Length: 123
Image 1 (cartoon, one colour):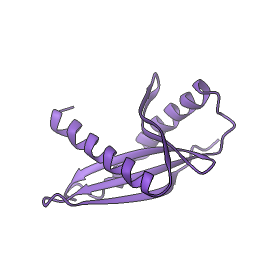
Image 2: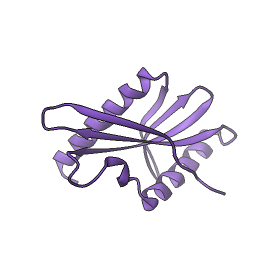
Image 3: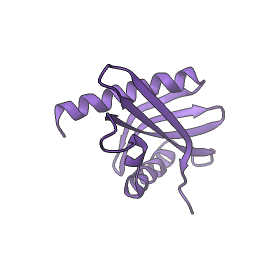
Image 4: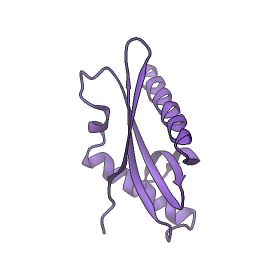
């Protein structure tokens, strides 16, 4: 991954973190990395443990950022979330998977969109 893409991702994750804090979420972990994958943000929304995937794009030539959370990416996040739950002995908690799309405009403005319950883990 190029330095430019890493920088873009970090900027989007920071904007997403602030966005969630403004909405009353509590950030538990940023950039969780386990053997089975990574999760951009692990947060709490009330009593619910939330695994958050952040997708950031400059402009919309490649489509909406949230479209980047495809089925393959969802499976990766679910595996990492299950590992997180086992590792932290919190598998009894109510959980949710949220998606955040960050669209950066050339003028520096950012549009942040949160989708609560963007996907489910299934059985």
